Length: 441
Ligand SMILES: Cc1ncc(COP(=O)(O)O)c(C=O)c1O
Image (tube, rainbow, N blue to C red):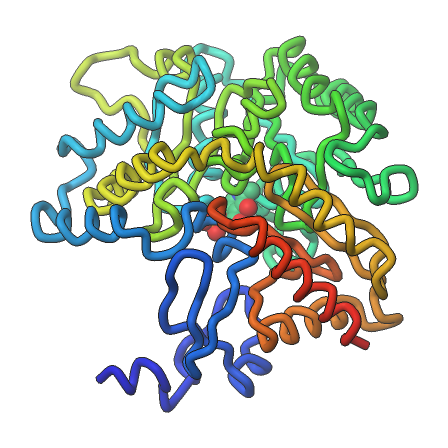
């Protein structure tokens, strides 16, 4: 049985997500186990995790407390209906999340993924305005190059063309702000770029076009991750906040990757000192171990729904697995682990070292920009003429063969290691990337 798990004899049935299926199935890359900073491959090689899985395994792999909590909970209460019934762990976990959330975020709605968190947040925003008698506010404003998951709401407000173009008309009533990437002016900036805060004023133009009275919410990733790590220019998020306040528009931060310590603070809202009205999370909420997400909302938003007859459901939305007991147990054990090891702020201590290591790649072949913040880094490569993405994909495969997991999007290498990484492992990861850059076409 062990054997068939290690070496499957047919790879055909599984249609893999966001994967070049035919390429993969010709030369599969598989992991069979993981511990702390490393994966192990089918042929027994150790691979250093430079991406915390998919930006989610913030405390490293197979952490005993989390594993044990899941095991115990599965034998105690495996499932409880999520609608009109409850179980104590969901309430405990929500309280624990509110404790570490930015001030004013007092309520939590559970989902199972980042995509579900985003669609939930968009629905809350529109329904909130309606609940308080302002039903003409239905428009949603996202941003070019934004990634908000793959459900229809998320791809509609998102701005990654490949994720949108195949899927018809998407949601109506959506507009997009320009992205903040200014390669000429901000290349090789360490941390937050100096130039570009004024791009936020484009929001004023869009709001004027549609009239503020029709706009429900603006959604942005505080640091755009999946598009290749775009760091907000100094003062940009503060400007967005001010414009939203001026026009009564809700501001949603999609913190699916920035939440739970990635920038060296519990949330990006803490890091930048800008508090949105709604925060979407997932991934690091359970250390990536069990699918789960959560939407944090301010008290005023939650309270606007709490009216009408008491026996009537206030918000017609939810998932079979919202607040699943095993996910909650995993989440509580994750928060315990983060707390015991100081992981929600460890990135702050490591960030200067990380920054120097990353920027030491300047001058290596093909490198046209390097960006960093907290424990996030991006190395942008010059694309091969006429073959965009090919060079970065080669780098990804070569890094895997050398013993490092990196992530690539377009021609950008994105790094986001578990927050337990040591300085020695940072050097090791960067050395792998250096060697790979020297080896690709
Ligand atoms: C900012 C952001 N929002 C939403 C998502 C979607 O999360 P999921 O893949 O869990 O649906 C992601 C995933 O990377 C993300 O980075």
